[in-house]
Amino acid sequence: MLKLKLENPNDVWELENVLQEEDLINAKTMRRKMIDRKDGEEKGNKRPVYLTIELDKMKFHEHTGNLRLTGPIKDGPEDVELDSYHTIVAEPGKILTIVKKGGWKDWQMRTIKKAYKKPPEVLVCALDREEATIAKVSNGKEIITTVRSGGSGKQYEGEESDEYLGEVSSVIRRKEGDFDKIVVAGPGFTKDKIYRILEDGGLSEKTVKANTSHAGSTGVEEVIKRGVIEKVVKDSRISEESSEVERLFEEFSKDSGEVAYGEEDVEKAVEMGAAKKILVSEKKLRKLRDLVDEAEEKGAEVMIVTERHESGEKLGKIGGIAAFLRYRIS
Image (tube, rainbow, N blue to C red; front, side, top):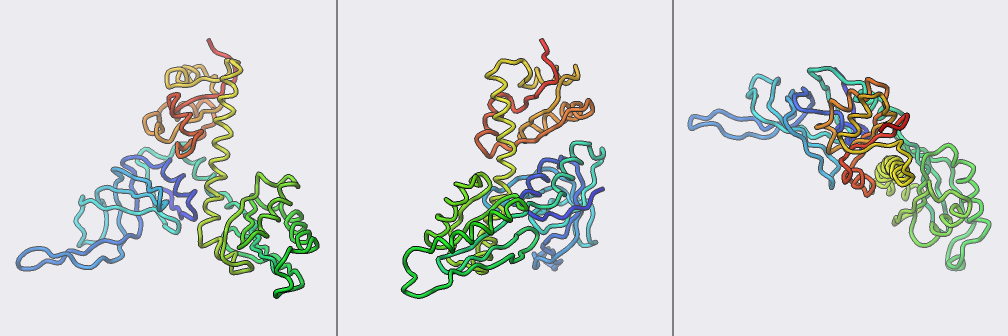
């Protein structure tokens, strides 16, 4: 049994990969109460209850980032009909207790532990021509410093001073090593100038821009509320997956013989103990669970790749599973 709290959209993604049919899931959820009347039952208002369902199917909703878990009710209040179907919505903030009848596999536990690591720390700079607020955003928001241009009003409606831009970019460069990503946000073009300075300094890969209506602390809040941080976290995972898939295709092009793809060839590599790292599409994962489990038992690392990006689609087109090999096999 594991009790999990989903803290961000990435947690929901990881949860989808480790759940399977017949898992027992308990959570606080909303259920409509049925009221007995002389002429039959009548639907009452929804109320919060704790229910346990046996997972029958699940569906990830791209536009909300939520995972809908559906199955027959196995435990709940006395007035809830057992074996009637219910859907639990898994979303950030949700606490779930999960029991796997066959126990948790090693790769499933590693996936959970990976998601359990400290969330990415993002440096957010929300600025305009007059003021820049630089903050740390992780589980919460912490203002690091505020830099002011030293002037306001109509006489300052032209170009920002080099001194102001230099001070802002200098603060970001001094702090960037402590952060996974940098978000430069604000109205107007000042954010673009700071981005170019950071780009020239070699920070373009970890820096993204965002449009906001405000600068300062309000602008930082706007970045958070608009879901920019969640997108950065999601893109970070996509970047990691894409890098591995592209490395795989580079090995194909070399014809080195140190990669295998497709269910049959990967299965052969796993049986021989030659598989070093397995890339498996989340769409194929449920079908290939036994193969993935065997690969882990023989010491192979497993990476689950979503097909919600171009590299993931490329993996899907070659059978949804591939392996980096420890040595060539015929």
